[in-house]
Length: 267
Image 1 (cartoon, rainbow, N blue to C red):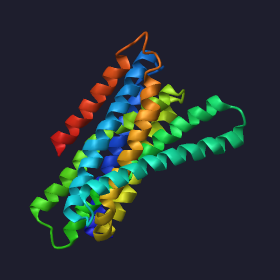
Image 2: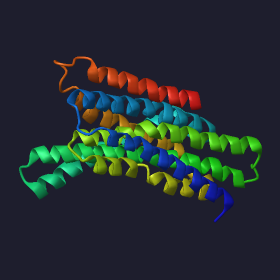
Image 3: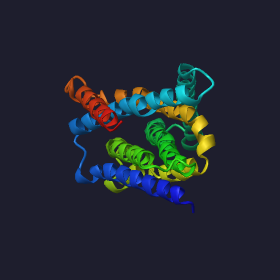
Image 4: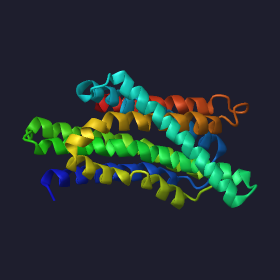
C-alpha cells in the first residue's frame, strides 16, 4: 500500500477511535435520569447544528471557491438541500417499510425511525470528514511532501478527531434515552465512525477526483444533520419543558458553543 494511503488510514483510524471514546461516555451512567437525558439530547442537537456549519458548510464553501466551476453559494445550497431531501425521503421509506412489517405498532415504528435517522445522519457526516483527511494526505504524494503540508494534513486529522468525541456522545446518549442498553448504545455510537477509515483510504487513492465532489459531500451531510436535529432531537428534548423550562435549551446552547470552540480553535 502507498505510504501516504497508509498514513491516511492510520489517521482516520485515530478519528474513529476518538468517536468510540465519545460514545463510551454512555457507559458511565447506570440508568438514564430524565432531566440529564434531556440536557444531553439538547447537547447532541447543539453539537450537530454547530458541526453542520463549522465542520461542513464553511469548508464546503471554501473548497468550492477554490476548485468549483459553479459559484460557491450555489454548490453549498444545492448540496444542503439535497442532504435534507435525502433524509426526508429516507424517513418516509423507513416509516412505510416498518408500517408494512409491524402493522399498527406506531410507537415502536417512530422510535426506530428516530434511531435510524440519527445514526444515518452522523454516519453521512463522517464520510466527507474521512474524505477530507484522505485528501489531505493524498495531496502529499503529488510532489507536495513538505514539512508544512505534512503538518497541515496532521492538523486536519487531529482537528476532525477531537470534533468526533462529542459526536460519538451525540449518538450514544440519545440511544440510551430511547431505552437501549449501555453496551448497545456504545456499539452503535462508535459504529457511526467506522466509515471514516474507508472514506480516508478512498480520498487518498482518488485525491484528484474526490477533491471535486468534496464540497457537495460536505454540504449534503450538513443538510442531513440539520434536518435530523430540528425534526427529531430538538422536539424530543423539549418534552418536559414545563417542569424544566431551560434544561434542554441550555444543553443545546452548550453543545453548540463547545463544538464551535473546537472547530474554530482547531481550524
